Amino acid sequence: MRLRIMNEQDVAAGLNLNTLAGWNQTAADWRRFLGNSPRGCFVVEHDGKVVGTAATINYENRFAWIGMVLVDPAFQKRGVGTGLLEKAIEHLDNRGIRTMKLDATPQGKPIYTKLGFAEEYEIERWILKRPNPKTSANSGSTFVALSGMQGERILQLDKDLFGADRTFLLRALIEEAPEFTLAAGKDESIQGYALGRHGLFADHLGPWMASTQTAAEKLLQEFVAKSSRETLIVDCLKANFMAVELLRGFGFARSRPLTRMFRGPNTHSGRPESICAILGPEFG
Image (cartoon, rainbow, N blue to C red; front, side, top):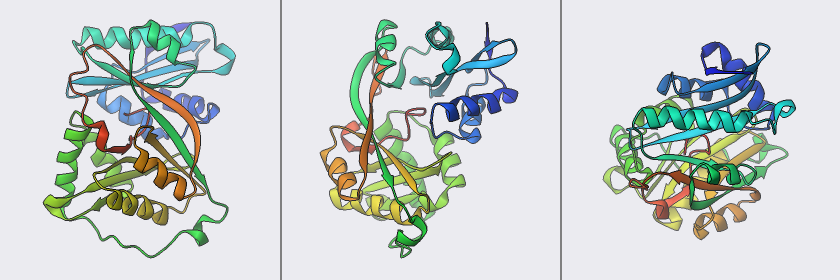
């Protein structure tokens, strides 16, 4: 088996692996990693076939994210995933990025712990299944298109709440799914915001940030109304009881746990108390 840097020609193979795993990422998501970290994404191939992946994305050199750690089921438990993780860590260490973060599944958590990652907080994936979404979704919208000032304010707030500037990523999401770019409040008095994206099999809400229950509820309600997909996904902070109760009230059900972990100094931790849901485990 050969470990090498991922390139554009590997996107289809990466998409195949995340499809096999039941993950929601698209080819566009893979290209976001390659665009930000062209030498920080890796594959393992066997006889010319990609059987494992790992990707990194850098946020202002404050911290880097490790995601898309995938291994073909036929090659699991053979050290492929661990080798890819070690390569990603080595790459980030060589770049001088002291802090690394990721969202771990229960299966991956012991491996990350052995590699020096510590727990930060818990996340839960919530899923809503709707049999007839196009007819059950509320077509009436209480939100209007964002003003330029609102858009800039969202980007400013996100930097503070997330812990680093990820404007390059959020702008791409806004461009691809403008209908999911939502704000509660006006201009400088924004009390919450949310973005969303069209995944492989579901629409995904995140980031979802709100300082009040009223703002959080309006944002969730609007996302649910604007989506016409059968399946909706939200990765909610377990400690945010307000968001948890809202999701339960809208008919979402818990799907699986995740653990946010970090390696190195957690200097830029953001403000998780205002986070209802993350962007996604691959991006943070």
